[in-house]
Image (cartoon, rainbow, N blue to C red; front, top):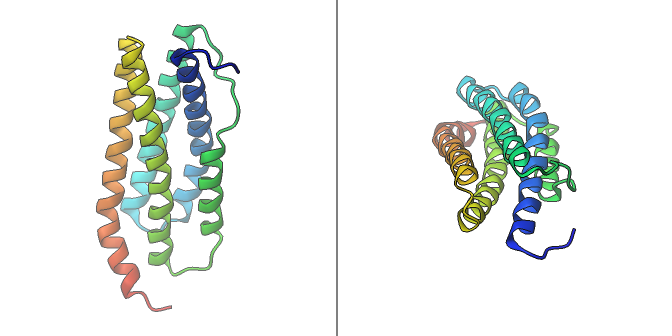
Length: 165
């Protein structure tokens, strides 16, 4: 792809996020099955639903632009997901496993927050108000998920600290 304009970069970054969301959508059910905390499981399943909406919003943006969602696979989220999957295969106490799951999920959230922050700014600069609104909504949901995970971590990390292996 030739990058002649901010619009080209915008499309590229949207495709990267689309790929990331599709990959995240595939791993969240597995992560939910591996957690013991009911509250954490509920947060993961809620975010899986939000992820479906994030994909739909991105598809709406691509449709309005008359562009395909096809792009290269998001290598950044690939690595983060690879680490998360490796963690799920570890032999760990339930509380320690859940603490590690939160850490893995927060890495994913922080990647998404950075990406959505950039594309929302690009949409603003390109005067794409409808896109900006949709991207801002997704960005807020990603931030809310990160905050929820941080709150859950307070209790789960304490339990993990007290765990005897």
